[in-house]
View (tube, rainbow, N blue to C red):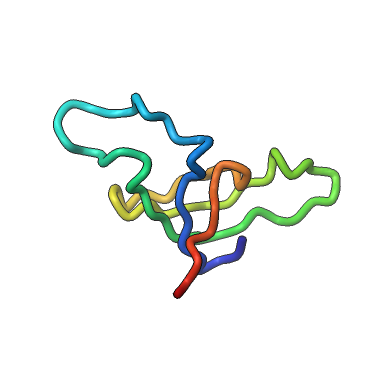
Length: 76
């Protein structure tokens, strides 16, 4: 994963019961985010603990997310 990649939450990490009142935010299956910054690569950090900063399109917020929860959306 690198800066500029479009990502989504892996199906195995989506919460099907996640919702707020009304239609906002959309279900996690519809979330698309842009990788804004990667954490410095540290060889001692296990893959399950590596993180990147993602700007979610639905909120415009940039948050820190575990890379193991995300997958890159392939460009076609």
